[in-house]
Structure formats: structure tokens, C-alpha cells
Image 1 (cartoon, rainbow, N blue to C red):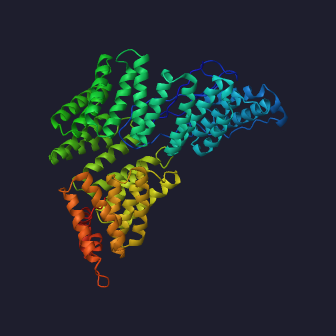
Image 2: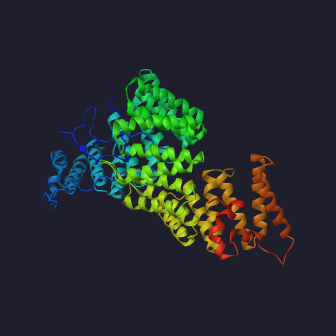
Image 3: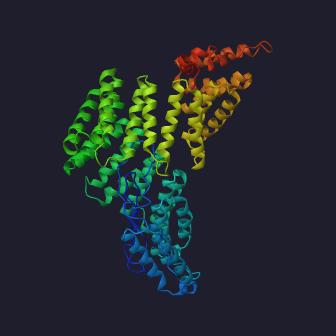
Length: 596
């Protein structure tokens, strides 16, 4: 039975290298499908889902040549020997570092030959060749063109014809998932991976180690999509399979526990996360993996910080810092990442001078990066530092760092998710400094990018709509703000539920906006619901509950004033003194439940 093994594209992946068999017949392990070399990466807490686009010109240092067209008569495509020959030509072209366009031409011709020779019968050779065509499209950065090719490749195999066909279909789904992921289409990516996992499980059984690898891979994708319950279930299944088939305290189990810790941390189950990390660290120590132990120490420090166990957090960070400096050098990005965490810790403990000092140390490293440092690493670091400057009430400096981060990232499919996150944060910074027009433009740009990638129903999309609504209120565009809040409400109700804090925040914003528009009854209805939920969840003595009671009482009082009504909520949406808007606007939001 062939091995059904998932492959992964990582943010730091090298350009795709496609390995083709010497002949067109399927053999046991490779089964006639293209093997794509990729490196596995440990999961990152960031939601961000960025993956590096392979370089479209591997031979950028050499003179570009015009792709040669091989003159082949259409009738010769019926020759059964032509497909394998052209596929070998494609392989040789890739191996020599020649033009990928020429390799693509060979592969497309090979696919046509395989299709004509196979007739109406399912052909594994054709499926394999289409996988190669799609991989070359991806290497050229043409991810949109690779999608229909892979969808066609998936339709070629016939599951009733055995495990070889199952492998071909599985590989197609996994490659399709990778391609959607590179385009930032996480929902479609997850769907493709789930289809591949279903085929693999049906072929190999529930407890096969190769199924565990795919489960773990899909769990990481769910983490990137912030679908933590699904990720937790898959990771638990992976752990169970590895316990059954691997030695006790194996490296596979350690990797599973690190991912499980990440999921538990995201779900705020910090004690469970700490337990998984400690067990993973013990395994790595036993295997002499010093750098991995240091990376786990950083994660342990993060958990201690979340638990407000600051001394233990400092100890974990300092342990990791010592190892990184001794093994990677003082100016490595890993060192800078620990500096950022220490800066965050000292900010939270009120030691602002030490916090800023660590930020400056990290910025010095990013200003003169060591060879091998990727733009993505620097951009992520600058984004994290900007969040600290925002927290210490230096929004202008935070905004400069975000703008620097944006300049480092090319507008490619691999970076679009990261760019959207940075641009949304820039919108928040513009709002904080009173540049509401630029804030609205930033949010509008993010919304357009999310719509283009098919992510109109994600919770992040709903949150950005809410933020754009707030900017519109400050620009006196109340009707537009109401439309944005209403759309955000519908999305967050679907994605997060009616009781979620983000959803309640949008309810509160919408109620205030309705009051400003004169729709008092609608505002009262929403506030009554908010008050009911907050009393159930927080208790009647909570300050937030008192605020909602005061708001509701005020509106109920106003509802009796049919003609001579004053829009009190509008005064809290927009201050009457334009000079005071920049300084006081943000504070007034929080008093009336606005989420910024």
C-alpha cells in the first residue's frame, strides 16, 4: 500500500523543487506523483497565515533566455512514448535551472499526450503530470492558474481502482490546499485538506502514522484560521496515534505537545498549555536539542506572563536568551524576539524605562540584520514592537514602525494575510491620533482585500467592519457607520455567537448609532438585550452593567419626548468641540461600549 503523506509549505520555504520519476509508470513509494520538497516549521502564535512565494526566476543571476518552443505535430501526441519523454524533458529543464516557462511548456504537452493516449480511462500518468504543471505555475507565482489544473487533476483518479488512485487524489487535494493557502483563501484551503484527510483515512485506517502527520498539518491550518476547537480535536488524535506507534517521549510527541500548548494558550487554558510545554521540553533535553529547548523556554515564559507570574517569566526568557546568544549570535532575530517579550513584560509590570530599552535593543538588531534574516521576520518584529509603543501611548512612533513593516513586504499572495493585519493595525493607529480619514481608508483597503480573497464571513472581517464604522462616526458619516455596524453584527453573530464580547461591542456601537439617527426604539431594544446578557454573564454589580443601565434609563426617558428630543448618544459619538476630538474622542468611546 502506498504511503499517503501530507506535505507542507512554510513561511520560510525554499523555492519548489519538483522531482519527477525516470519513467511515467507509478512505483511504490512515489506512486507517480510529484514530490515537492518543503521544510516543516513549528507553529507560531501569530494569526497571521503568510507563506513565502517561490522565486519566479531561480536563475536571476544569469541572462534570461527566450523559452524555446518544441515543434511537435499534433498527431504525434497519440504516441504513448511521447508523454514520458516530454515529462523527462520538463524534469531535466527544472534540474538544470533553465527557464521554468520552458519546463511548463514541456509539462503541458506531456499532459495533452497522456490525455489523448488514455482516452476515457482514468490515468495516473495524467494526474501526475497535472500535479507537475500546477507546481510549476506556483513556482512562477501563478497560483490562480494552478487552482483549475489541480481541480482537474483531482477528477482524474478513480477511487474504486485501488490505493494508487487514492494516493493521486489525496496528493491533489493537499496540493490544492497549499495553493489556496498561498492565495490567502483559508476556508477553501481547509476544505481541500479535509477532503484529502478523509481519503487518506479511508485508505490507510484511523490509526496509521501517516494519518497523524496529516492531522497535525490540518490542525496547524485550523490554528492559522483561529478555529481552535477543530485544531484541538485533530491534535488530540495526532497525539493518540503517536503514542500508539512511537517510542515513549518521542520527538513526534514533543512536536504535538508544542502545538497543543499553542492551542491551549489561544483558548486561555494556560495551566494545560504549561503542562504540555514542560513535557515537550523534557523530551528535547533528553535528545540534546538545545535550540529547541530555548524556543520552548520562550513559550513557557509567554505562559507565565499570561498567568502574571512575572519572575518565572523573566527566568525563562533569560534562559532562552543565553542559549540563543551563544548558539546564534548577539544580532540574531531570535535574540530580538526575546528582547521584545522582555519589553512587553516590563511594560506590564510598570517598568517603562526597561521596556523601552529592550525595544531599542530589538530595533538595533532589525536595523542591521544578520545574513539570512528574512523581510518577514523583520516585519513581524517591527509589528510587535509597534504594539508596545501603542500601549505606552506613543501612537505616532507605533505608526512609523508599522509603515516600515509594510514597506518590507511585497504585495504577493504569500504576504497578503500579513499585510492585511498590519494595514488594519495602521487604521487603529490613525484613529488614535485623530487622523480619521486615513483610518477609514486603511480599513476600507483591508475590507477590499478580504473580499477579494473570499473571506467575507470571518470574525476578523467583522471586527474590521466595526473599526471602519467607528472611523465613519468620527467623520459624521452616521448612515454609513450604521450599515457597517449592521454587517459586522451579522458576521460576528454567525462566527462568535451573540454572547461574545466582540459581538456585544458591536451591539453597543449600533445602539448608540441608532440613537444618533433618531431610531430610539431600535436603540432601546438592543440595549435591553445587552443589559440582559451582561447581567447573566457578569452579575448585576459589574461596572459595565451599571453603564448599560444608565444608558438604557436615559433612552427610556428620552422616548417620551416625541418632538423636543436631544440625541444624547450623539454627544458621546461626536464631541461638539472639534479641537477636543483628537484628545478626548477615544476615551468617550469606551464609556459607551465602543470597541476600538
